[in-house]
Image (cartoon, helix red, strand yellow):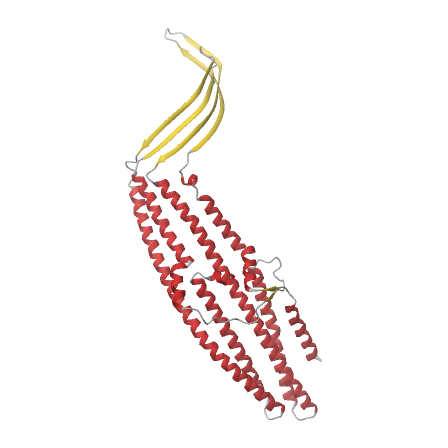
Length: 438
């Protein structure tokens, strides 16, 4: 009776998985690209960099200020006249009102403005690369989790099959025990094995749930517990990856490597900006305004001025405590460091690629081997269960054949999943992760 209840519970738990919305890998990625918080944040950062890449922010354009003000004073005056007399004035009130438009423009600063504008443009392109890098990382994460969910579904199917095999063995033992052809110990061992397989199945439901929740989290679904169903039930193994093509694309299109090159360009622009201090600067200013003074003393009661003013300033820094030379030396060192970091990153990428390619080829061979092992294990179990039904095989030997079958299925599934992870990582390194959207 306990076995019947357990079977019903396990069947009900499994049935709930297949009544949900169906998602393909492409749909998961598209949903995540639209909703994932990290993607939305990095896109906003990219927009900020684009907004900053303007001529006005670089200093190309003049600035205009409109201002107005009013002030007043009250003073007591003691004036000593030339004849020796003293004149005292108390409570003299004076007021001033001003309004004007002022224009300022740096016409030349030793090409520093040009270097700053180029730097802002490079930061904009770097923002685009950061967005691309984040998207590629996200696609790799969601593809890895998607195929992990596929693998967990396959494992669930295998464990269900294992439970069904243990159930059949238990049924046979119960029939034999009822007629007295086997001992109670055999019956108890069959029950223990059935319970152990059922326990593994229950644990697999938890693992499957965790993988589904993680996939929902990556897609930023409102309800992370939503019971989605994935379209794929098998892991499609790609055996046609080309080593040389992937390596060439990595050196040409890898987002991290391109970002490192942008950092080198930024260092060179910082050096150009530091060099601009070797040149003189030219600044222009102009204004138009009104000034009114209300006098509390003297022969003039009101003085007003309305008109245009302008000016030009040419300057050159002769000596600044050798700071200019220090900044230029440091800028050259930063360029060298940028080159070293780029070379270091390229070396690291080559090493990662070599390891991933080796893992990819090795897992392909393991996969072929495990497919053969699975066929042998299936045939071995078919022979074992037939001999067991005929009473020609002990229960422990049948259990060994059953475990060998389950382990062969698990090893094949793991090899397929590892091949897929290597494929995802290799495409990500070569800048081709977006292929999963095709």
